[in-house]
Amino acid sequence: MAKIEIKNLYKDYDSSGNNTVHAVKNASLTVNDGEVVVIIGPSGSGKSTLLRTINKLESVTSGHIYIDGVDITDPKTDIRKIREEVGMVFQSYNLFPHLTVLDNVTIGPRRVRNMGKREAEKLGMELLDRVGLAEKAKAHPNMLSGGQQQRVAIARALAMQPKAMLFDEPTSALDPEMIKEVLDVMLSLAKDGMTMLLVTHEMGFARAAADKVIFMDAGEIIEEGSPEELFTNPKNERTKSFLDHIL
Image (cartoon, rainbow, N blue to C red; front, side, top):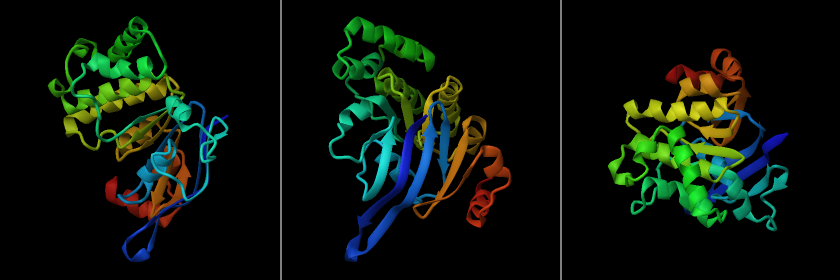
């Protein structure tokens, strides 16, 4: 079953001089239950914009987005409930600086899902252990490295027990030596069957974890295929050119 389905999506912006910028043009993609789909492409190609439409951080100009068969572009859809089911991890960690690591992880389930403190903290500690940070539970974010903060952000998203996870270039703000610790957590999620859609420049992760890789350029989905197909035998000349520059 399709967990996330995007059909004929357009996202336009009005730029200065009343010129329309087509950030996303006629994009269609499917993420099946338990599938890992990676979106790659040059900067400004519409990757992050497309990702952000899935939980309506960006409105759509036209087209449809379905999550578990529910059309989130329908004005009658309660987007708050959808956001409870789809976790998102951003480039920046967005942790609450005044809260401890454990409180950052548990605030969502306690306030949104009305989970009791003891149950939430048990879940929070399990998730912090999963991302290798159980010993940092009582620390504050400013006491952590960037990679550690991003792993806390992943634990926080997982604490809502989402049906799918979105990642918007989660390692782009990290120093090179911190990237692996975040990718290792994401790889473990993929191996455990978490449905994931992510934008990344980490081609090694795409090769290792993705079921499907999508290449975007100038707002359009140019090509998609398995990592083996897309990285070793791309069919589109624009895809070939992009990969020649980065691989």
